[in-house]
Amino acid sequence: MIAYVGIGANLGDARANVLDALRRLALLDGTMVIETSGLYRTAPVDSSGPDYINAVACIDTSFDPHQLLAALQDIEQAHGRERPYRNAPRTLDLDLLLYGDQQIATDTLTVPHPRMHERGFVMAPLGEIAPDLVIPGLGAVHDYLPLVASQAVEKIG
Image 1: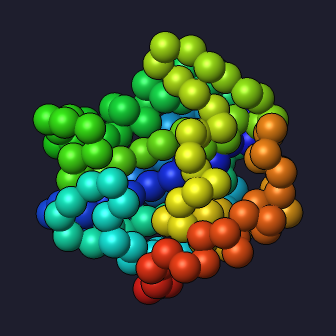
Image 2: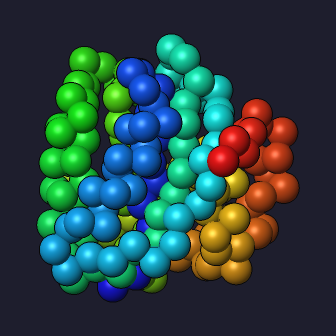
């Protein structure tokens, strides 16, 4: 299954944490990283702390969506992710943005990721690697890029 994963960090060596997350995604059994965006610097949204480093990865995985979520959370834990309160600064944040064309709504997982289409830190890197991708129930990524263009998103690598 083709899935898209949003990656972000703003504590510790955020750039190194994002790059390590990409490496760890590639090491997951039954998973291959197909493409990754560049790195982007963004101001925190509904959060605090230093600027974030963000990226998006397109992967091909044999994991079902809940297994993939668990694997992503394991990678976060390996980076000392803590969740003291909603939208707290973080050493690493991995979000399952899209899982094929599926729409999933369970107690533990919502796909497409809520509000992804409203967030420049998701849409800019996603638009870099998949501008014509259709977000189930919403439309093409490229249609949302102008709507987030006013958000401070800087490509840094």
